[in-house]
Amino acid sequence: MTSASESDAEPAQVVVYTRENCHLCDDAIETIERVADSVSRPVDVETVDVDADPDLRDRYGERVPYVTVDGRPAFKYRVDADDLRATLTGSA
Image (tube, rainbow, N blue to C red; front, side, top):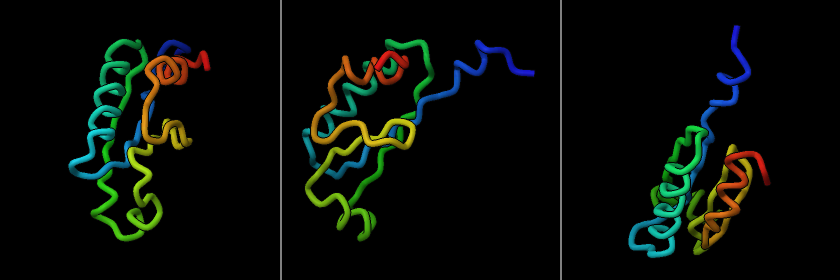
């Protein structure tokens, strides 16, 4: 049986669609990692290089970084630390 506190610890799944030599992508990842370190909920961060997949390159084009949280679109181009913190802690 899982207690409520254990189920609250379900990691957030953050995916950052990115590409090489993208300063906005670097900034977004830095913000995500900083916020992840400041919240009690575990956060799994995955980066996906859109240029490694023709379908992703066509889908996202120059619209990177593109960030999803738990499978839902969350940010494009810039990540707002306060908004991300609220999303991760459920106070959004």
